[in-house]
Image 1 (cartoon, rainbow, N blue to C red):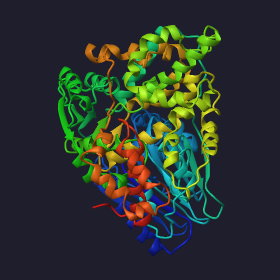
Image 2: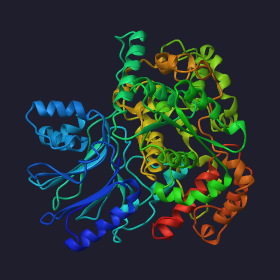
Image 3: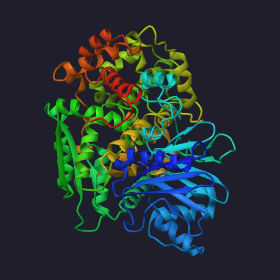
Image 4: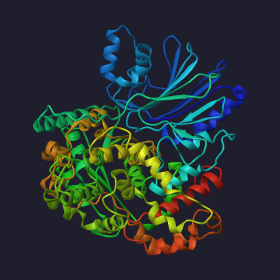
Length: 637
């Protein structure tokens, strides 16, 4: 896990290019505290830079790394978990290795298989290879988008980096808000596709590669992988349960490969608890395992520590905990926004940031349960969406046609889990019922509906344009069932915002975060599972619990009150953070921003329901404007 940066193509002289590169690496220093390096090809001109977090082959893995013949030079962020198996295959084919690093495996794999090498990797990665023979840059990002890659092209030169802020080390790169990105953020609190909140900066989408030859036009981007929903009717339910368990175990096994101490995030929910249980089983006997858990200072409603302790005690793990309050939020949110580059996802980034800080004091690698809700159907909103589908099927007498994963009668026992989501249900059904699937899930995900009356007259937003962009993801992949279409959309959007948080909060402290539930083999398997088996009778995580439920204490396996990691921000905004919110959102420059009607915004925040997201979205957006648009993008003190 590292920080990468590069500049390819003529714009300035070698000395200025090197100076810009120096500033880029300085802005990425937190990602790689164990070393740095750069490589220059004057004739191209090409500059590649790297900040290293040493995890595998600590002595010999320095980057940028060149091939033995000097043809290829690589800067790489991430980890190729199956590097040992690939190394053996390449050695058998005649390749000679000088290190035991996964970095060198990428170089040899590219030399052997060209661009198709990415299809052989199991891991998380964002890398760039300069091919001096072809005079071409080849870049790639992992299938699920665990590792980030951003780029800017000015018509002649390509700049790329692990974080957006590093691109601004070149002062010619404009820091201008993207109006479409801003509109998407207000709707979903994340941007869609390759868009960012900056007009001239793009992200390389997950499962894509980019190639660029100086003087040969703009960079070319293409997909090399996507989720394919081909339902497997040949295998039995028992086969899917057994196969899922096998892949879960193998995914965790691969992600235990490291030459440094490791631990795990532990929330007390099913996903992280299964990861911890498998890690304990697969680690050598006597090997230490540390767990890291966060909670808030407002009592049991915001405290999952007793569940996390239950799991840690069962597996002999050394449990570490942190308790957070409103003051911690006020003191750290500006620094968090700086690390994020652009606001995304929800307030969970705040506790994640502090739990990562805690973990970094003890280990260099952590495993986590990220992705389990998107992969195994774990969100209450999935049940909300399907409840309406079942109601429609019952009224129209079509529920037995095979169009539905569950009937209304069978889903009823699962409905008590929605008790705390009554406000969501009211808002969802207030906007209509029984519409087309894309429109209804858009209404469930859209946060713009509540924000619209708070926008200033100068800031015009067309919700139909946002809906059209939503449909461009929700409807394009060929999945037939409602639940698969929802899962596909979330994997391309909401999951990306969560992985953004995962990357930034861990790398802020030089910590490598690994997510075994997002092994691409698990994703491909789940895409073939019959929808009824995934979501039988509306039971969230039905197949996952059948495959791995025996790893859980019965108290966790059977609990119905899992909270996730809810942040009491709406309560704080009415109490300990009231003055903080007013100072930020009521300030003159916030009022002159031209986005919100700020008095109405502050009134709404003061009366916002629990777990509402208006205050969170507004405060992060204003702090982002101040740091990256008004200011110089330098670290918040």
